[in-house]
Image (cartoon, rainbow, N blue to C red):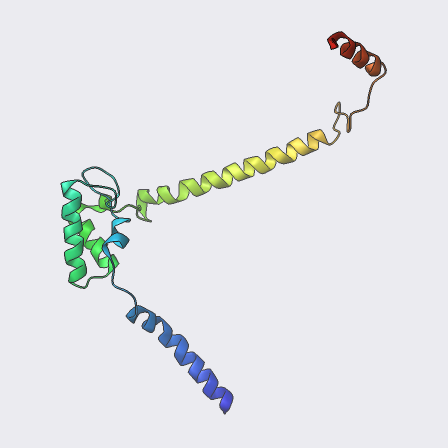
Length: 154
């Protein structure tokens, strides 16, 4: 009986935790949104831009924050007003998906090429045909070294 109560309490806490977290979520702030929005005039992040257009967008964001909108609602309102180019990060669908996929693929391909190259390099250095496994002096090396050193002595 006690185990059932503990299980029920755990289940209730698990179900209610996300709702509590959402209720306690802090309202968005201007610096938080500025990093994710671009100035349509100059193409810089809103946090870096000093254009009159950027100042108008900041005023609009402050107004929307005062109205109690969430961060996503504010970004949606900015997309309606200025188009999807106003967002700093590309969408995750359509052609914009390439902005997320291509860098990841490039990293994977570079890693695979590096791995293959290192394996080939190691196998070539490991004593393949025509490649000595370690350096051994050949007959006459000592005499040639002594003659070369004698030539450069003062």
